[in-house]
Image 1 (tube, rainbow, N blue to C red):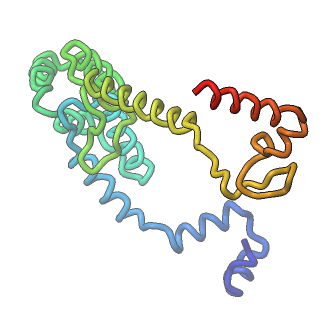
Image 2: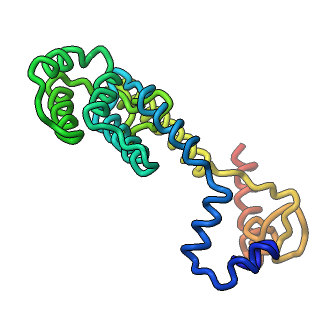
Length: 220
């Protein structure tokens, strides 16, 4: 680390501990706390949950922002934090908000999350994956494809596989015009069709063929 620093910093950190070095570098080059505080507080009070999104992901994201703000030295009052969470909910949670304000339950952030999870489950509100405006997205699975599209895809794969097999099994007729006979060393035929090779197998074959041909002519 010292080798990558300028001479001024390397002399300054010659006897310093790694923790002290990181703290000094963070103070010198890190994001100022007031800028980070402004960004975090804006994210808390501007976050909006979309209809059909996961309330668990949304509330945990809000809690994470509040904890980050507390680490910066500006802890948010719990009641104000719960108000921020409730104000970020979509219109589908209006019945929950009405009941919550009437009963005023004494719960912390995670207790409020439990109530919201029960309401979401009872009313089947979780339908999509993206839940925040300007925030992180949840890792839920996307919509499942319909049976019609699935059947079309299977049929297309079957046709492609059948075509591939037909192409592989189709015999290609070889061109014997350039073939060279291993027996007589002449071009235009293979050994199995070579007259000289056939004659060598049965010397009387040619005479038999001539006799048969003569009988045929005599019969006509």
